Image 1 (tube, rainbow, N blue to C red):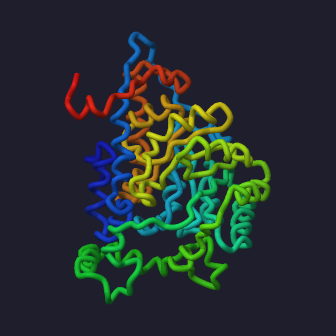
Image 2: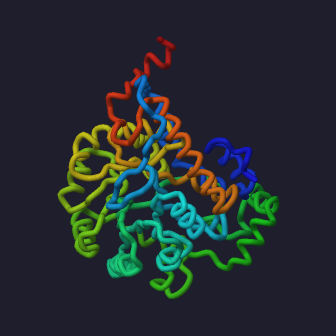
Image 3: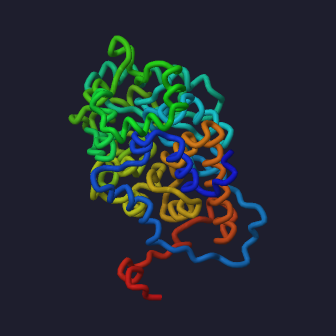
Length: 388
């Protein structure tokens, strides 16, 4: 079904074809002008690779240890909310595919299947991503549920408010009743009756992990109202105590100073992330922020790059710049929308095959051999004027 998809952008095209246009806008959009969203991927072009010659790469070894877990290659599935919108199996399909691909799956607080439902899927390592809620009792309850369900890692996301994603606003489907949607949105759903029928048969859409706190189905208004702009490092330390010594990551950091603070409050990993370019338009790209953070704390905790990865060579460059691993969101969601669980497996396979090929051509027989000596940062001025 997806045999014609040779890279992640091919899966994106297939996802666009299969999804109603308002849902694809939610999946693919960034904040305001989307400059940061685009820069996340474009930043990789500012670094080139100088291959090492005559290295035995008959076999390349991609296994690594990150977030306290042994995984088969240095990429894992990042947490993404409302995954059921892209396939009715949503998070369950992704968790199964990740386990088969030998890597870790991350479940979002904003998931459409519960902590317990996803825990029951497969035996692969799992991470729970926590949004700190205004209701600290709800926050602690989520941490304790993840602990009881056997999640291996807790990741606290530093996100005070939701960004201004204008592509979503134009569709109207998340902030207006259906009878006030623009005609383009109505037609977008009308052209995809199969998607509409499957969603209707699945039942009402809600945030499964926080429904009990709201006395029933928890909608978008309840969830966004619970995001707490008063969160501080003191809260991270408290959550680390609740979690009790297992691997703890802080996601959404873009400065070396913040990474050092994460170490001080007990984090074992930092995820360099601007939330897929969905928050601050004009903010720094994650790959641009990575080297300084890796130099500051990379010898003490795991540094993970999140955002912009679309090719195996991007993973190689991130590792060379000091990342222990990369996490991906949109690439596997494109696969989920294009072909369900099989599509997720396809996306992961594409990236892993591309990484292994890039390692062979670059003369890197294993992950340990990938370092900063492999790369050169290209002057943007030279690149723009075509200087060779």
